[in-house]
Length: 563
Ligand SMILES: Cc1cc2nc3c(=O)[nH]c(=O)nc-3n(C[C@H](O)[C@H](O)[C@H](O)COP(=O)(O)OP(=O)(O)OC[C@H]3O[C@@H](n4cnc5c(N)ncnc54)[C@H](O)[C@@H]3O)c2cc1C
Image (tube, rainbow, N blue to C red; front, top):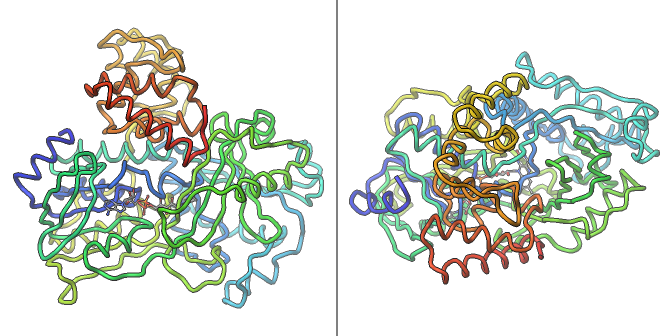
């Protein structure tokens, strides 16, 4: 069903078993699991899918080695296992990532770690080789038998400098361990929405629909594209609004203070020298006061992050000039001879971590774990319970969603029929990482679509096994390359517009593709893409120009992109 059909069905029948408010990765993961288990479920987001905290991550599928210091052993074990599952279930988007820590001291942090664990130390500090070695031994142990990534390795100063010639010669050694790289989180999210809807005719997801209020047995939703309002009568509401959870509860007449969010920003750099130097490695390290910095290979670009700053209102988060200076300075600490300037920045982004509110003095010590907070009964004005999903990392979304789904199924008196544990996601279904098998699949697509192999190979990198559907669509019409970006064609963009729930131009350039994040947009690209959407959706000139102007403004104000 398309958006209009879902909305008119809702007008006729406002009863749903479960309403999920918020389509970040936690809402989406839960939506998929409930759909798979036959539940009648509606998910709404006031913006696009995966446009909140879930669009601002460091792109790591990781256990969070430093959370060991905070004593979060359960979380680290769960996240390491989930990292392994993501690499297996979504191999088209999540790949093993060698992660290197340049180490500047042997002994530092030796006393801080146990003191932090006991809660006697609040200040972050730099960790030395010994404490890092102990952490990595534990981290490897959590991977268990299900090994999808190699064990960690320590390299001497000499060997490290041979491998990375521009690395700061003041290091004492380096440690390399493995995590996962989520190359395109927004696609991984939307592919799950599509999977869920394909699996269950009673599972529907709507972007640009806000939950505005609720009383007794009714919730009021507002279509943000038309201002029209709709009533829904759910048996249960899942508040998956991430950093906005307390605001959504307020809309329901509930007073909560679950979230103590921290802001984190990132820069994307076009810097071939730095990109060459890091190779396939993420460099993950601490500055002198123990704050984490990462320098990360993202396609042919370099991702640099991140900050961790307390913030009251998530809508006020943006990347400041101070953060930009801080990141540029941190690169110089590790690669002192590589010159990086503001000219190299092609994109910047910021999000708010939906952490549980905490009394910890340093943001790094706030728990990264998740919980389900239940509000129900006489002291609410609602006839249904509200489950708030507090916390939850990208990496552990599946496990969190499973815990939520089990609780919901118990409430509805249903039992679990299927598990997402080994279920491939979207273009990961039938996808192979083996080069010979990839070639065989691409030859097969080429034989029946007539598209050339090089083009199919590009599509395979972007869409995994979903290439088959994209190629079939392309084949059904006359196709031409975009003038401003010949690596894309009109029909490829039309496919995304028609089959991937695109409503606005920025959905396409920020979340269905990596065009904006990787700095691929050229002069004229916005107008050209708006033109393709206008043809797909029947927009008139006024609507098309308004979308283009809005997108240009958004790119400049939020992401520092100028043409
Ligand atoms: C800077 C940063 C770096 C991170 N790095 C990593 C990492 O490398 N690896 C990792 O595993 N995790 C990482 N995380 C954590 C992870 O990204 C988040 O914890 C996770 O994405 C939270 O998802 P969510 O679904 O709970 O929230 P969100 O993604 O914020 O989703 C909530 C949604 O609710 C919607 N909403 C709000 N109010 C309403 C309403 N009234 N009606 C309808 N919809 C509403 C919003 O529009 C939003 O889309 C990082 C987070 C940040 C901020």
